[in-house]
View 1 (tube, rainbow over the protein chains, first blue to last red):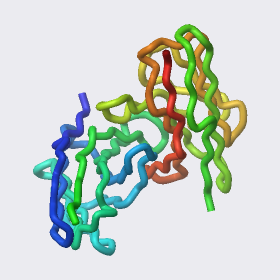
View 2 (cartoon, helix red, strand yellow; view 1 turned 60 degrees about the vertical axis):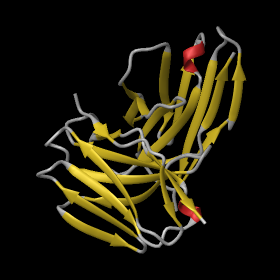
View 3 (cartoon, rainbow over the protein chains, first blue to last red; view 1 turned 90 degrees about the vertical axis):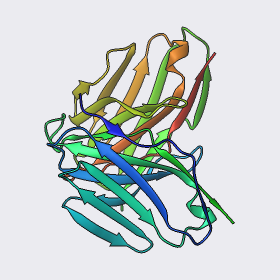
Length: 115
Length: 111
């Protein structure tokens, strides 16, 4: 069974610090990886996609992928109170339904950035 | 640009009543469409997906059904709601890439 695991948190960091969010997945055939941000009461918003091993940076966000260890992480630099949300990790596998594969989501890590 | 709409935004229904939730996408053609449910304290659960008009795949057997009568319209239905159907229902779309984009969601409370 394909699984995506995340620490539920809450992860609390002070404003200006680096927040580190982690995710592991069970299926070695997984091919693309995503981070979504979900504010309380709102729908998930895609913030990062990563397809190959290594780092991908976008502004204050860096996604890191290590396929050998089946591990993907999200770093948020200079954390702001507005970053306080639940962060969902999602993993795509082409064999899991549909023409592009479907996503399997972790349960999310709640991040709290304290002023 | 693409836009996805869902309605209603919130819904309170008695047990045993029917349900119809609608999702429409603008600004794209032939999208893949998805229905998810997010229950309190639980992750996103894929309920149905569709790769075209009239083509529905079910991921979880339950008392819900889905239909896609038009290219950019996706409907989630139930004939008789259960208490366990309460949750946040999310519609999502994708086109030629695995990234999915979510609508604003419908919060359903079954009493």
